[in-house]
Length: 342
Image (cartoon, rainbow, N blue to C red):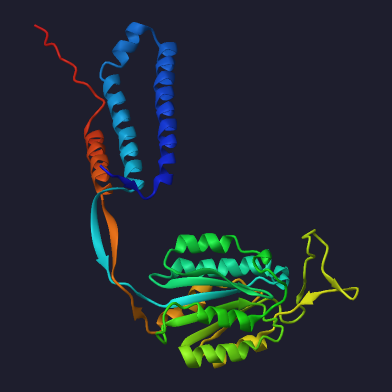
């Protein structure tokens, strides 16, 4: 029989049960030694004549068995394969992630790039049924993950992203938006979104024009998320990543500020919204996806046939409850025959 366990990590709780077994054995042994110090063997028999040690052991075993069956229920065993047809609805979302060196600035801990990856992960936690993809850019835009519903594979790709993901330095937001727009797999207008996550620095790649064209010609809404301090900014770490050493240009340390103006204009002409993350810790899953993208009209995708296994934890919970009732009903007292004097 094919059996699946959804929460196998909780199997480690059996170590707790094993530890309790040791506590029970130690407790019985210590109680026995205490009685032996208190009285002689004959006297112990008289003092404990109404208490059954055997029944006490049985009650202890029943309680430990209850814990074992509860653990078996918690790990969520499932068997009994069946198939379910699920109609899928959703939106195609292409994330466009800045991987230029300025994204290593530390005004967001640990840096802008790692915080951006965390924000994308927050969105992945709340999406259901949407296809997602990933484009990274610096001086060149690269399609890292085509549109997919395999969120696990998407997360693996996202985890591997670094400033080395782009073959050339710079920051060309417009080129990245154009590549993302070309990466949608069908010509259906609407039901599509591009989410640009960057500090807003751009080297004349015409991002506003790219956003407007994607929206007017393909119905792709453009959402922008600005990272970093737009006031003072932050220094950019040096190429070798040595702590305390920063990039220099003409003898001066390079500082990077978030540029919100471009991002606001892109969102305005792109029919989307601008999220000023700045240096705050925000919940992008709610602010961007739940409050904005998910409220847009969703398209119907093909029906998916999904394998399911019947939930079976209730059997283990029922056995645990049955054993607990027996333990509560059982007494550790034993009957003593009373002899009548003639």
